[in-house]
Length: 358
Image 1 (cartoon, rainbow, N blue to C red):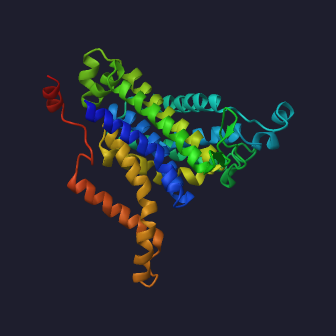
Image 2: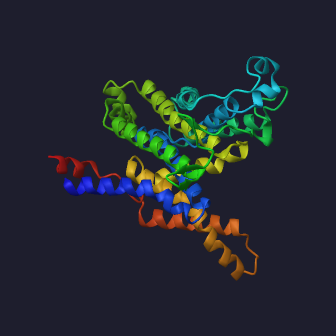
Image 3: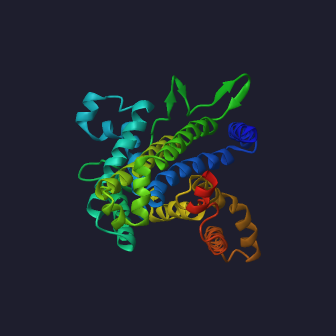
């Protein structure tokens, strides 16, 4: 028991010190850590839908986009510049507080999650995957084309001049000097994202052991048997879609604040596929595995930049470094699935876990 507490304390200290160490090597490395935390948040949300409820969602990036654009519209001068009625009420533009942004992002994304879930209640497996895939593409196409007749999303040009996050008067978009030590903006965002991830992990663990979580797992194992046992499968599925989507909405809002700019290019089909891959490669339904998968797959493309360069030189520049990176990522994923078909860190088998508890 004492060793477990010591490990937790050491792990917590490592997470707190990590950005300060990375900062000395350059802001790019802290930025990679920031984006890794956002992907962890996304993977945890998708794990509720795919891992707990067993509903294959290939359009999860749509909720990420909804959260990002929601924050982009509410924390930039875009609406005031394009709509006279908004300009009359808010001449300086909308600048919404973080304490409203996070619950609002979660609620709007949850609404879209339920909207997606409603027509797919009778679908399973491949058919469900195709419908959710279509939903993700529909959202991206809408974002790309809603710049006329009324300029709502600014089309492919995206929305810029988005406010940075401000907490108790502290602007995370500016450098902070503390006890003579400079803390960069990307490092401040790291701590905000870390708090959100830890809070999300707590929610996921509480959900996993709750009646709702057990109902989701019953539906995942056998929907007909779950229905026969009195579980309202319709409501449980809708709740899974909405709950999972809310994580995506919060993550998207934080992405918009962190980047200061959002455009439809950031929410392509490839993003959805990568988030699903994070959950599957880490270990479906197992929170530590999902976190590991998200960190590895989000950081791997950046690390492979240093490998793709020398390989490109060896081929006399015939192969593009971006293509080489994608090739290496694909090879790594194939090797992992061949060696560890249940994921890098799969959940323990039910029988074993029951034996250990007894």
